[in-house]
Length: 631
Image 1 (cartoon, rainbow, N blue to C red):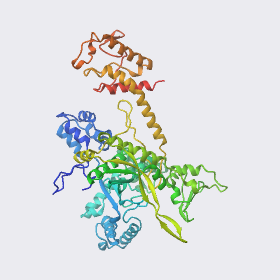
Image 2 (cartoon, one colour):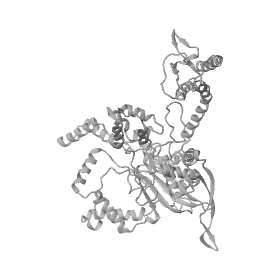
Image 3 (cartoon, rainbow, N blue to C red):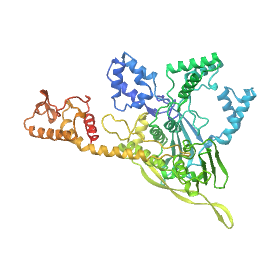
């Protein structure tokens, strides 16, 4: 069974124990637990949004806000039907393995079946047969078995490449027995404006949301280790750069159709009309197709690996650190010289044998990072040009990049695992593995490869028995963010920026690290004030902060009010009544007045209000956060 299939699957026939689905929806569970029997769609949405574990990302990806707000009065069963009509993203999985190498005839038939809905021998159109053979030759040469097995630490076993994919929108002939139905669906697809995402790394696999490259290792005592060589999302990396397609509004679609019709009727458009049509087409095609998990795709990938490790009996998960990632994807590994002429747009690269292996035209300073990475582009443009206007990097100068890799593999992924493992007493540890990296040397006058054992560092995370059992029994929430710092009431999670794709390219994450450091400092500064107020307010379960206008209070006034409040409570302590459990009853505390209006039991004296919620910590953080922002 695929680890990432439908979110609800029955156990396999014949299995002695029930197999839990790898992921579950916190939204679906929350609605099932809500006691409300009926209400408006908006009321169900509001109550649902407040439930523990419900994430805004899931509500947005499933378009549940629009779906519920469009409903009037409804029963709980009807609300659950809304969830069924707007299900979580349906993920599927594909693996490439060395053992999956296919024979030429099998690849040929697979291509023919996918493109034309029949085996190759039944394809009679000569042009189609040539297209199939061209694609078969390409796959035999480039994509038979695993594709990126050279980018890993030596040793290990069972190297594979795991793809997490979304369903394809485009109809494929191989899925149809009725040609008329296929033609109708293709017309509907073309009219819908939908499109599939195609990664440059996975040419035969549309809609790859994330990929993981892994292999197996054994520890010094025979431990079974799942070694993660790379985690990446080409889709969301490109989306971060280019944005996501939002599509045209119905009005814009109608306008474009009218212009197209006008063009057909009049055999041409006025310059003004042509410019508008071009603008609409560009708007429609701008960016990559929209996709879920924009900010937490790396957590989705890690949860899939945690589930896999628990299910398959791995003792730990190891991650290749950022320093090794930077080495394997450094320009210096493949090239000894890179030349770029911004005036002509020519980019050239030679390997260590002096062979021209890169020859690109039409390259600009803006898209240069697409070819040699962000840091490589910055470095080559920072070097003085020669008298012909050419910038160059040679030899050791090609040792560039790595900051983004280090931030992602040494900080972001370990932080996620540390927070996930905290309840189980598991934390990421440093380890070293020896691996044989044969080296070409001259022996007795002849060149030959000799053993060369090198110690490679790894991040290692133990899968404890309790963790394994919990994952296997419950599964993991499809949407969950742990270890991401937040500030104040309702503040959005600060999702780290992912590195540019492995298999070449990296990004500088210094800005992200600086932002996280500031957030941590802000949170630390808030703690003392939190304790001061919580000690006074949080004791009474029936009272909330009332009549507070944070925007009207200065820092000094806030501090003074906290001090006065504490002193007044301490002075009144002998006389105040005690609620059940000994909590202070603020109805007995001297009341305060504001312009003749009594505010009974109010701890602050200004007018206005903050949001009334049952979480006083939330209200305090809202107040304190505003204070911190003042000079």
